[in-house]
Image 1 (cartoon, rainbow over the protein chains, first blue to last red):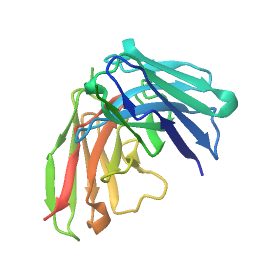
Image 2: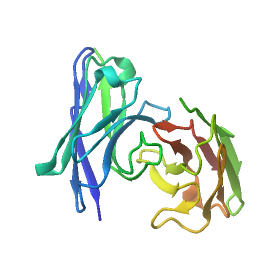
Image 3: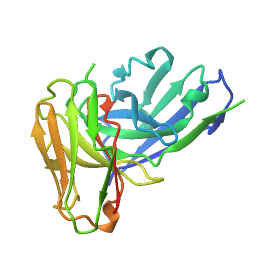
Image 4: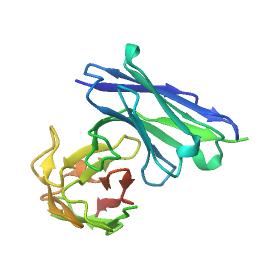
Length: 122
Length: 103
């Protein structure tokens, strides 16, 4: 059974770079798209972006200028970097496995990580 | 950009009753629509994909229907564990969610 385990810094200051990593255990890494999603406190879900095992990426246009998603196939891991964070980036960040590319509009996310709370505060 | 809307924002239902949740897309998304359930402090859980296919392990009381711009998630007989927030999703866009709470 596939499990996603994520980790990263939980407290950042404004202008710093958010960095999170998600490891995939118990299943294939190739053949899927791997996404990051976030949820501000008390609000809904926002898709950030995705990557496949080959390193092909798609990003939410609203965050594209600040987001980098990368993959380490040797470790079955993928990572998120979000630069120049502000208080508006405070959220729970989730990694998830995508069945099909999300940007291709047919994709959906069937396995989720446990979530990491990231707080941006001076 | 396709906009997803959900109604109602909150649905108050008694245990054992049927719950009907709606999701609307601003333009046709064919059957490319998924539903998720999220409980407080937990990650979302995939319920339905392809508008009507239940994900692995999802009880039969959950059903999805619709195509084009109008979609419905039905919970036939609400159990205590079903009180949660439900989101629809198409592509990189989630709906704002419907909270199902106890009447």
